[in-house]
Structures are given as C-alpha cells and as structure tokens.
Length: 327
Ligand code: UDP
Image 1 (cartoon, rainbow, N blue to C red):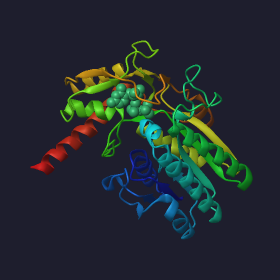
Image 2: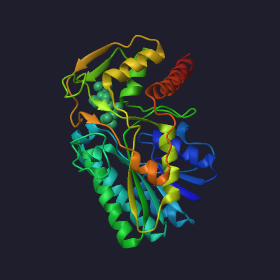
Image 3: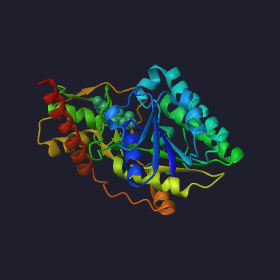
Image 4: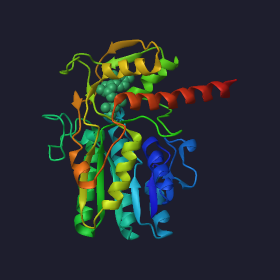
C-alpha cells in the first residue's frame, strides 16, 4: 500500500514505518524533527520535512495514498498540564488539518496513535474500551477529542479508521529505541542512571494507593505495538471507527520496573522518592482482549524482562556511540 506516516522520525512512528517497509509497503514520512531523530527515519522511506498541518494537503495531493498512520503529536503528560495550548494546537488542530487533507484527496484509511490517558483514573482494572473516558490531563483530553473527531468523519465521510490506545510503550526494535533530547519516560531514564548519565532515578510519589505505593503501569513492547498497526490497517472498514487498547495486561509498579532494570543491567541504580507528578493516574492496566479477538493480535514480547533487556541493549549501544563520538 502507499502510506503516509506522520511522526515517522519519532520512537513509535519510526518502528512502525520500518515494519511497514519490511512488509513491502511504500512509505512516505512527514516529520518536523521537533522531537524525532533523523537517524530513526528508516531506510527506504520517502521523507518530507515539515509540520503535518502545513504539508499534509500537498503531500497527499501528489499521489494515490491508500492510508495514513498518524503518530505526530505532543505526548508528555506533565508538559501538557503546563502548556496545554501547545497540545490543543499540536494535536487537535493538526489532526483536523490532516483529516481534511485526507478527505479532500480521497485517502480512505487512518490508523491513529491514541493513548490510555484518554481513560483517566479508571474505576477498575484491567481497562476495557467501553469504560468511561475521563482524562486527568490535557494530553489525554486532546487525544480523546481527536477520537470524537475521527468518529464523526467515519460517520459523515466514510473514513475507515482505527484508534489504538497505547499503554506504556517500551523496548527497542533493531537500532530504533527511545532516544529523545528531553527524556521524561521511566525506563529510558532508569537506564540512563544505569549507564551513569544521571545520578539517580526520582520516584514520583510513593504514597499512591497501590501495593508498594508507586504507580502501576502496563508496559508493551514496541515491536508488538507495531504489529497491531499493520493489523488495524488491514482490518479498517469504510465508515467504521474502531478503538482498541494495546497493552500486555500486566501491571508493574515504578519500583518493580527499577528492580527489573537493576537485574538486566547488573548495575546499581540509586533511587530517591520525589513529589508526585501532575496529571499522573495511580494505575493504568489494559485489557487487550478486544484487539486479540477481533484482529487476531498476538503479542510475543509481553514480559517486562524482555522489554527491559531490549531497551538496555539499545541504550547501552547509544551510550557507546555517544562516548566514541566525544573521543
Ligand atoms: N516516573 C517516575 N520517575 C521518572 C519518570 C516516570 O517515577 O523519572 C513514573 C511516572 O510518575 C509514572 C510512571 O513512572 O507513574 C511511568 O511514567 P512515564 O512517563 O514513563 O509514562 P506515562 O505513564 O506518563 O505515560
């Protein structure tokens, strides 16, 4: 298929683009490199540098695109609480421009990168797709608003669409992993501590209503996540907007993640309790039964040890490269 991948230089977008290319699709990436990396753009992809809202209409008018995978977004919970305007523009306004460009150019199919943050603080876990959506931060609110937008486009204009609500994506695929200029995510930060690039990991609160007092999350391997995008694209039906959760179904506390990273790295990882981070819910664990039964998704890297090991191999390699570049 001829596909547009927005945000294809970011962590999730670049792995999905790489997998689509491996499967023989023709992939064009749009990225403004605000958070993405040039090295992450997979070989064989066409690249258009720019903001999605500015370039989508032009890119899509140039050929017979059959689908769009939309990853480009602002995606940090804490930041979204501090600068919500950037999130409403960067996520909602941008996606509206993209959907209009798709409609004007008869691009029939969309896979949208959504998030567990659309649910907010769940009343029970695991979270199923029919549970209430009450985001606790602007990031989740923008993604939920986009879901409403997509539903209306499916209904009125026949768009074939799937939103995938990611839980905590982690791990690496080949030489693509988490490599952000400003890192806020737990596993890459813990591994930077293991490498000696940071002094310690700050645990954002140890007085949450969870078994060990630290927040519980559901970590999903990036490669399993990419497979789900391919399945969603194949299953998309005109006029239907499907929504699926994507997680491993297993919850791990922040302390358990730190312990697992100590185990796979064999290194000391000092930790210190710090205040809670704004916008964080206590527990987010997915039920992914719907995508398993409807699309036949079969995650194969669900254990935390595999996820942490793959992330560590990537991070260590990155650390070595940075070290030799300095010499
Ligand atoms: N976290 C932490 N210290 C850090 C980074 C994250 O304690 O330096 C916690 C954070 O409060 C959350 C969990 O780790 O409970 C996962 O956070 P992350 O930012 O990786 O993903 P999110 O759940 O926000 O999507």
